[in-house]
Length: 259
Ligand SMILES: [Zn+2]
Image (cartoon, rainbow, N blue to C red):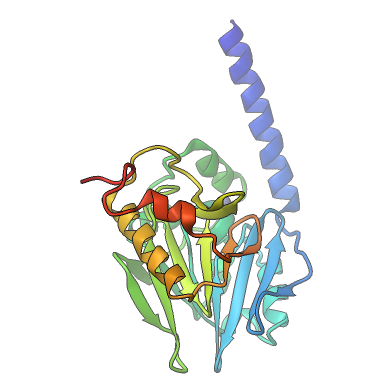
C-alpha cells in the first residue's frame, strides 16, 4: 500500500514537472558574452551557446523549445538567423538539449552515434524521465547528419576546428566539444568544489571510452587550452587548476578505469 502511495505521488510530481516544463519552455534569458565570440542564453533550464566563425554560425546544444525562441534571441546577438546556422553540436540526445535544432534547416547536426537513434525517435532514452518529458514537450524527431564515433576534429571553416571527445556515462552517446578554449560539456561534466567532476558515474567503474575521453580532456587542460567549462544547466565556469579530480579518475588505469 505504501509502495502504491509512493508511486502515485511520484506520478503526480512528474506530471506537475511536465506541465511546468511545457509552459516555461519558451523562456529565454538575455544573451550574454562568454568570450568575445561565444554567446550564451538560458532557455528556461537549459543552456544554449553559439559562436560566429567567419561567415558561419555554429551552435552548441539547442535547448528545450521546439519553437526556438531562445535560440533565435541568441542568434540575434550575433546578427544571425536560424537559417544561417551551419553546424549544431549536440552533447547528447536528451529532449532538453536538442529541441530547437530542427528549426535550423541548413545545419549539419553532429551527435554521438549512440544517441542518434534517440534523436530520430527510433529508440527511446534509457532513462524514464527524459523519455516522458520529451513526449510531453513534443520535441520533434531529428535525423543526425554526422554520427560521431571516437574523437574527431571537425572543420568549421576559417581555419578553425571543433574537437569532439566522447564521454559516455550520462547517455551512451554523450560528447564534449572544445572550441575557442571552451569545453562544452552538456550534462557529462561540471565544476564542483574540488575541481572538474564527471556528472554521473561517481565511484562506479568507467567504460574504456569514458577513460580515454577523460585522459584526452586532461591533456587539453595541461596544454592550457581550456579556459572555461560551459555546462548544460549551470552556465560557464572558469577552470583554473580545476582538472585535479579528473586526473584522479583516469591516472593510467586508475581505480575507476578498466585494465
Ligand atoms: Zn540536461
